[in-house]
Length: 431
Image (cartoon, rainbow, N blue to C red):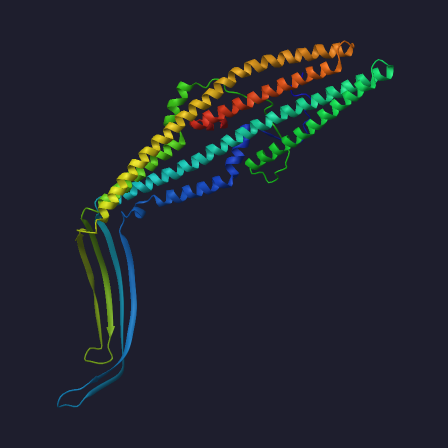
């Protein structure tokens, strides 16, 4: 009787399911769009060309000229002077260059680009999981506030009925004005509390609209669910292996380890000899205003192989390799730290979840007792066998019991959301 009393739903309001709220949030969220764009950039960068596996072909075209004056002085003969001689030259060439071997540096670079692409995918996945958990939590919070709002509305109607009874008794001389005034004070107090609850409900509505990136943040809607659903079948022994296998933070830490190891291999590759190949085809044209030759043209193919090796670089390679080994060790420590934190978080959250499941049973029993107590108290009050203060205490006990129950349900739901998030199962809310 007390639960969900008096809720009024305006016709024409859009009905949202949890999966619909999540879908809208995933489609519209701005931070998620940025993350997806970054993922697309990383995917584009993962190519054999960016890694240096493909040859580089260039085209060089040039035209030049000079205007010169020459003054030639000869012994025993007449001097020769040439003024403002305009010579020109033009060239065109196609060149090809390619690394044939750099100690597997190119392959390691390609592998690193692939891991970086996977890393950005995991970052996007983390954005999605966090957004889903926030939407589910706010969806559940909104239901909680709706229930509290309905309960307070029923409390107001109950206090209003009491004022009516006391007013009739007062007019018939069966009650004092003090009792009527006290009933009015209770009614005003309940009405004030209901008004504050309406404000909290409206704020939650705005937050849910914000998470769905609604155009009108003040838009009204109603939810398909009228109660917070709890998954009571989560088992720690099943969650732990899933967490170690699927937790996004652990997967990201693992990818960071791989990238650090590839950085070490890339540095190590520079200690090997390198072999490069070049080839090209060129055409050259020269024009002369003075001299016996008026112009000259040359064309042909050029090619070459370069074999080289860094013999000494001031011990920089040794320093970089040493630093890279330390970085690998640090990443291993960081992975172990993250794993330990996640194990501890999983255990702590599961304790909360397990304890709240037990509290749910207790609070449900308390609520049934409080409801029955109120029914009895109302009948006694109508017959004049119960004082107003005693009725108020019974009414308050019922309100407290309902608030405790919905609070425990919400806290249990938050623990459930956290367990599914940490174990990589948060997307089950989309089903």
